[in-house]
Image 1: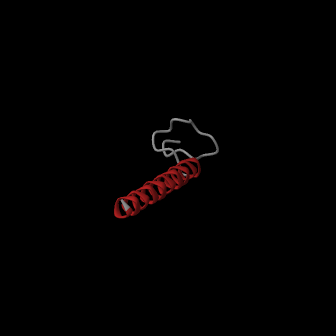
Image 2 (image 1 turned 135 degrees about the vertical axis):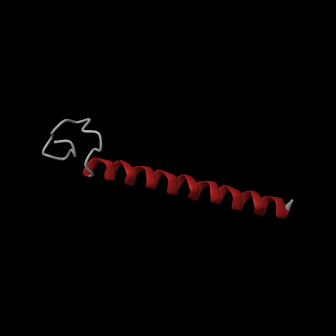
Length: 53
C-alpha cells in the first residue's frame, strides 16, 4: 500500500503541476493575443494593430 500511495501522490502532483502550467500558458497566450496584432483584421483598425489596415 505504501508504494501505491507514493505513486498516487506523485501522479497527483504531476496533474497539479500540469494543470498549473496549462493555466499559466493559457493566460500568457491570451495576454499575448491581446498585445499582438490580429492576423485577420477581425477587430478592424483599432489603433493600427491589424495587418490589413
